[in-house]
Length: 198
Image (cartoon, rainbow, N blue to C red; front, side, top):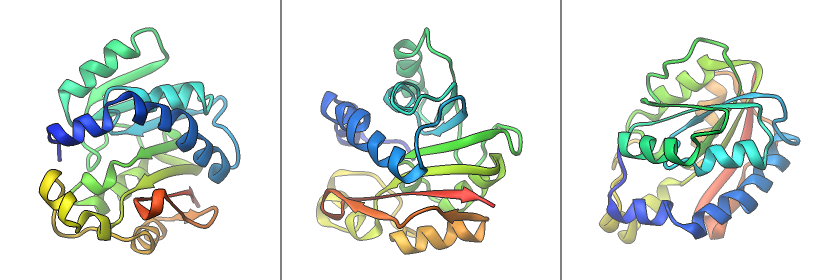
């Protein structure tokens, strides 16, 4: 599901970029057991390319493959990342056009809660991860999406949303097991964690 104008403004601004580069990168380093030095990383929902910058500059991945459902965002990311080791495309988290067991790490900067059939996205992430590979995730829980503000000003699927424990259970169902306790940040606005493919 694509973002509306309000969500684009909230996600595509300098404050959000600084937060991703500093706080979110630190959360992922801690939860993932360090950086991603030398790894092939897949980012789902690349937006305008800030996440890929974080993965390269803060987590030290060797190469990033990233996609987004919104072709406008992919074009913005191409302009931002034109000289970086990044491959960009338009794509769907429920049908990832990557070979099985092709990536060391998958990074989710708050995308899966936008996906109507999010369980299929989890299955696809598990498919493209190598054995021992890592999923780093930051997500928005159902109780926040159910608030008046989110229902009024944002566009999200209304049904089939998740809390952190339900998300973790679905990961485990696909062989992705938590490497640490899921953390709740920003007063419960998001939860973050890491899961490893067995």
